[in-house]
Image 1 (spheres, helix red, strand yellow):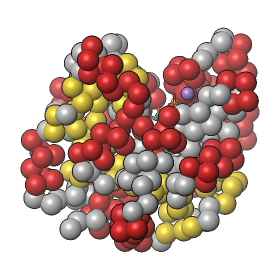
Image 2 (tube, rainbow, N blue to C red; image 1 turned 180 degrees about the vertical axis):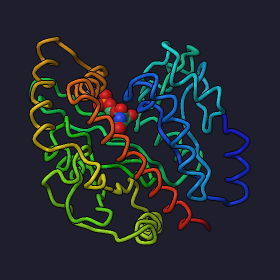
Image 3 (cartoon, rainbow, N blue to C red; image 1 turned 90 degrees about the horizontal axis):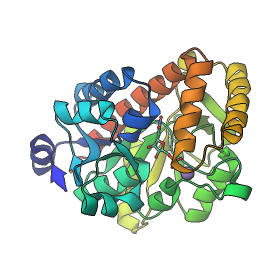
Length: 298
Ligand code: PSU
Ligand code: MN
């Protein structure tokens, strides 16, 4: 694993560090916008007083913290695979490059000792799970990895209640950040409640600290909703998502391609409105993650 000098120095000095995932950049956002977003998200972390560590695999080597060239490569290189935790070893052995999903990012961040990580929306149980058994590796990995994950819930393309149930079964705590409703990724609320609410970064950091003291092995999911003014219109969301799900079946999209297909479908068929909501959610999550990281300083 390669820690950038900036990340290594920050860790050694006990300064707050926030891990950022790269699949959202390489496969979740359209080009050329994605390259600017990668830089912008790092800027948000810095402005909030923490050091960003964007994580990706370059030529087989997991990188924790990328320079400008590395960030641009993640955004622009067609050879970037989508790397979940199970892909890390083959990528390493075969010298492949790829963007890391939540599962691989959380694994690498925790291995490097970084306690907080931000993304847009987690993967989870897909709506056609009964026939496909498609459940993101994010969930199983989070069940065994101690890190705080700030997200706007799980992607609304998924079966949200089934995903919440899986998280309960797996023993992963979900806390609403200033809300008692589970966020709906593009939408402020998924319509489902959460059992616990934290009211700021101190309380969120307190939950992570308590997990460590108690020896509970899982992540803490800090579910931070997109601001109401920036959410996608719920009626538009429901209509276009139904069309997108039907299109995915028709076009026989399966496996790793499902999530990027649906995100791109929504962007195209909402004239970019879903993209703006996705970005607003990610920006908010990155800011909150930096605030939590500051509260976790030893
Ligand atoms: N959040 C976003 N956009 C994304 C993702 C998260 O706003 O593209 C990515 C994450 O990397 C997550 C992945 O791990 O989608 C889930 O993919 P899958 O359903 O194939 O596990
Ligand atoms: Mn999947």
